[in-house]
Image: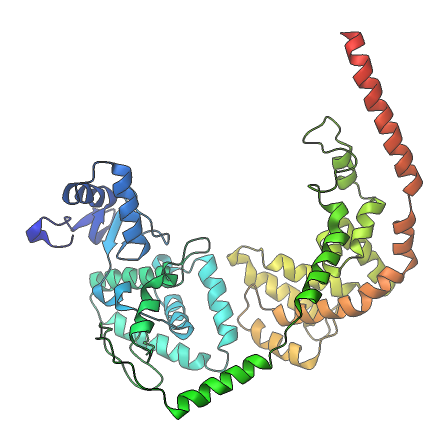
Length: 445
């Protein structure tokens, strides 16, 4: 497809406003080449075949992270053979961390991290906290090498490297094509699996460009192999397991507990507004005065009360009476932080720190020293998950202490027992009104 001598797809440099886009082809050119050279009559079939090739990363769009083929003027570029999936790459998270860290040091306008990449970088920074300095140094070294290259060459290599990671760390919602059989087949042929690094550096030695190796003869099992297998099997025996009967009992108990809240099993009361003209159910759900049926569900688990807006308000009032409302307000603030736009995250992190955790904070929360130390380090380079450890600690504190007291409190018991009688009368009155309307309507007609 790339060979011009045999009628390949024409690769050209396109002039854009104030710049040039080197070494690109259009989606239309690729689709037409497939139809012509593979005798495909249906354009849809050619687009499908091109999408399969693009999903593996051999062809990629230069302006999108989603590897698909379009029959239009979208610009595509061919992947360098060095990054081909057929070379059986097995990149590690450290390689991905170096790549993302390197992107943050380069041209921000052209290589700005997407939201999911920024979240991945923050997660990897927490995971590799001890060796992050080494990763940062590797990224700096790569950037220095890249800056010595020609601008056009550097632009092409950056896009090819980005496409490589779009295959191995795809956009959320896209299929990970590296989970196919290609690497599994290699492991079957070569039991002595060797991991390679994208940047040519492994823990033991420096590797060259990946190449196919001939199948190795199956070696005989040694005493060391048997010893490792025994160790592995012993570890499996010591793993915690549950009897199937216990699992079944838990599943049955869960099902019985939630059966009256499952609209497929228990019809909604009042009737379902989607199949009737009665909107009373929506009015009840929107009301700030919860029904007994709804309040009962808060007692199933701590997560149930946190999912319900009215439940959170009632729990917050209870915490205010115990002078510990800052715990829930901190938890809610951290949940809101995770939904903030990336440009507002740093400001919001500082606000949460000053309100709940900084020395002399107006709503100081009670954290253990370990969580506080981790959070203090995370705040220096704030992200959406800066307060993850602190939030988990506060969650467990509320669940084991405040939530149990709330269920025993008079406030919850009054809500649980209130309005049983009025609700039943209202239900009968609603049924009577519906009957009257159904009988009166034909009379009026």
